[in-house]
Amino acid sequence: MKDINSALLQAYYEVINPIVPCYEGEEPDDVKDKLYAVLSDATSNETSTSNSSDNESTIQLSVHSWEYKYNNSKTLNATVGDILEAIKPDSKSVLDLLSYGLQMLNLSVQIDRTERFGEIGGKVFITRTLIFKQDIFIL
Image (tube, rainbow, N blue to C red; front, top):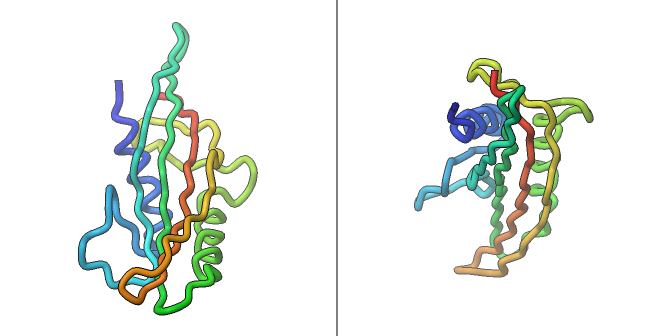
């Protein structure tokens, strides 16, 4: 049995962090970036058969943005578009997990939702949350 969740968190981090600052679990208290991402809630469910070792996993990505007074989400949506393009540039793309002894078989977005949290302390907050589902073969 292998640790699937740590491999997933690392693989997603390596793709997302060059685009926008990325944190695992939750953001630190002193985040100054107006746009940043948080990877969390990696879950795995073993779906092995007598012939193969398989796993169905999900991972949550939340991209947070804030602006003073107004936040129209244009920058947030453009950044999420860049992240989606980096993670899955075409319909058959998957993340490379071979260095972890794993092979991602397919990758899809299960949930994509936008939440507007309103104004807090003069800042307007919007978050876009994506949940990715992937089937993984254990080599």
